[in-house]
Amino acid sequence: MSILAWIVLGLVAGFIASKLVSRSGGSLVVDLVLGIVGAVVGGFLFNQFGSAGVTGLNLYSLLVAVIGAVVVLAIYHAFTGRRAL
Image (cartoon, rainbow, N blue to C red):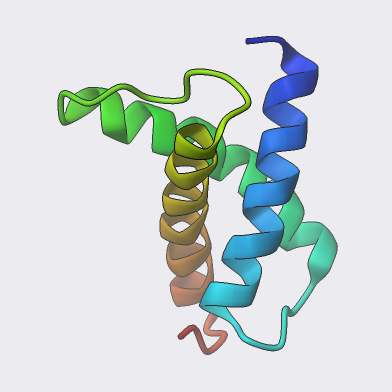
């Protein structure tokens, strides 16, 4: 998967995850950047647990990326003291 595809997938996942974690959306730029990181984290986590990680631009990969982005955003909000969920 190309770098551009990772960025697009991460941006979409970051937007969805920001709406799930903090309903107000908070800082959109930070949430989107953390969404890109979350896509990578989600792929890594799914690989560690024996499932396929991000496989391309499809619905399954979006789900993996959103789960990873939610994990990253929840950790970020826990460290910064912002209210999550």
